[in-house]
Length: 352
Image 1 (cartoon, one colour):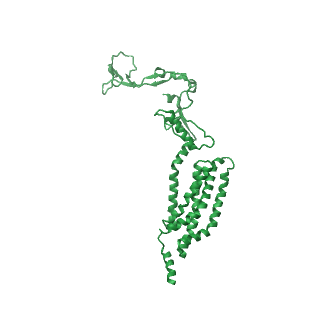
Image 2 (tube, rainbow, N blue to C red):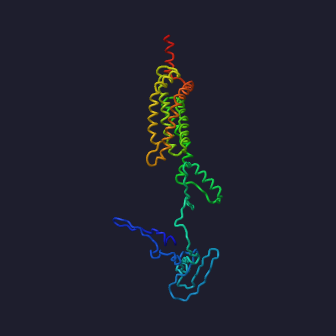
Image 3 (cartoon, rainbow, N blue to C red):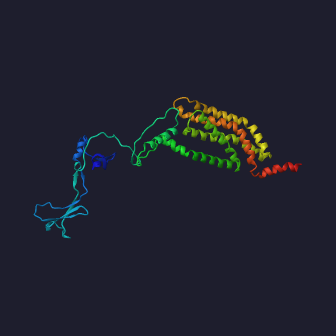
């Protein structure tokens, strides 16, 4: 009844050649100006009554039988004129009594919220908080949880983060999964490219140094591992591994085409590829420098991205030329030589 009166229920649609119009059922606007009109609102009761369908002024005798189990009342008529021709039973019509809303409720005026928020079908209230300068979001979330435990809220009251805090919480829980999936894809692609299961591991050994450099740079500038910093880590995975790829690609080609040993091939590759590696690293670092310095509006959002890239590139540049040759020589002992390499290795013996 309340929804029919104030809910603007759509009961029908009128169509014409050009438009369609919804028919809305509601109280007239003049009856919606004051809550006093609720006293005049009638709602159906749960009691169903069956009465005789008699529209004539005749003298009849009736007998009322009440079923206590169902709460219904049946009234039958003894007038033969009001009985059906087929069964001889009394004609009857079931009606639903209407009860005024004021009969079982009270109307009171008091201050209440203008709107009630819900989350997942449950009552919800949002409490916002701001972070002090230099305090990371993870620390703010920890303090909020600690305050929630200190209050001692009832068991039927639950607290959860929303908005940016919820997004950061979800991203933190998925960071390791995303990084692991990216590394797995890189390993599969490099394994197909090099036709080897060993040397893709050599390329992946450059990633820890880049990750350590990125984290140290964030700690140095007192920044948290935010979503933008995570994006910077993914960029580092693509930028840093190209250093190892340039060395390994040249070394493998030298071994397979010229029959050089692993030590000779990786040494020559490191010398010849040093300049391209340095140039590409400097180009990427200088490109991220404006992000790290922070120009323009919203620079505080972009700074973690630039600092992560520059820190990872600096660390990987110093460590790549040291770790990649060593790992290459060690892992090459586990690799099975190709048929072409075996022929090139036997060629000097045959010539002597």
